[in-house]
Length: 103
Image 1 (tube, one colour):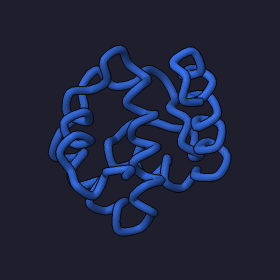
Image 2 (tube, one colour; image 1 turned 120 degrees about the vertical axis):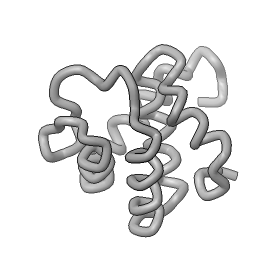
Image 3 (cartoon, helix red, strand yellow; image 1 turned 90 degrees about the vertical axis):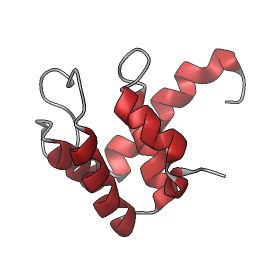
Image 4 (spheres, one colour; image 1 turned 45 degrees about the vertical axis):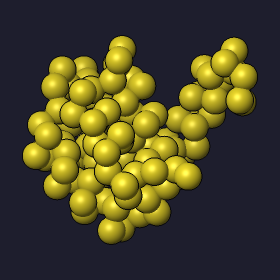
């Protein structure tokens, strides 16, 4: 999975795991941002064009206290891959929030 050619495979494996084993986290994230979903974390309809930075911060603050921060970070990184270039607001949080580091 460390090979660039395997990026897509790795992304799909992580998504499959998250969608099956972390449904409550995904649903709470969607609820926090006001993203319609099926109750299991799968987005219903189109992804948002923009993410509200204040709602994102509040949602992350709540989720980091409930879930393993590394698992939350993995989810946020996978979610951010869903649009080309990611959402600037989420990218900024992933780059600057010390709670959301994998190493």
